[in-house]
Picture (cartoon, rainbow, N blue to C red):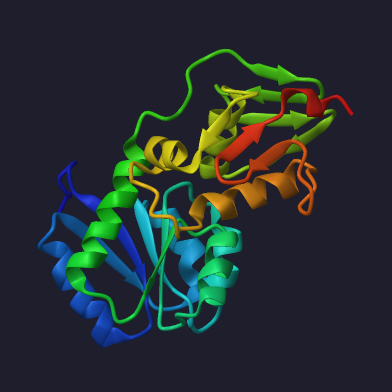
Length: 237
């Protein structure tokens, strides 16, 4: 039976059958079509036949764990990834976000909160943040918004969609300090609560890929107490 166009397609990767069934039943009542995959090492193949809008990903999976999948998924899937795990330490959550997850919830999670997190990620995905403008050039750095191609000298730099959106936001306002509140509102459509580290983690990944210093960044600078600044003069060398 063909699903309505308004129905969100969810891929739930969860090996706990009872929990998976509960989540499926609840999400179905919120205009979501859900398919379940119980092994981590079969997810990439499943993406060929099922084109989800979002992936809900457990970490402790047979075959391939969720952390390893987070590293592989951006090559096959451009939508949001929501990690769900009983591993609730700060270190686990930071690791998941650094590996490319868009959000992280700790089990057990209230079903209503899970739906709210899913809808928030899907709203962000639908926002018209994709820039429709000319290329930006700063010394050796070239940013093409039409193809989302980044070149640093002769080297092509591979970024995820979310990393590209952050880079474009910073570079299009080069030389200006952008507050975390502004960045959160623009990219995530939420207020910055003073604790969330999603943008910090995304900035750290950007720095690594763009050859910036992690200890003393000079290309994407942290202005303490204020926010981030893209330094236009730092891309010549």
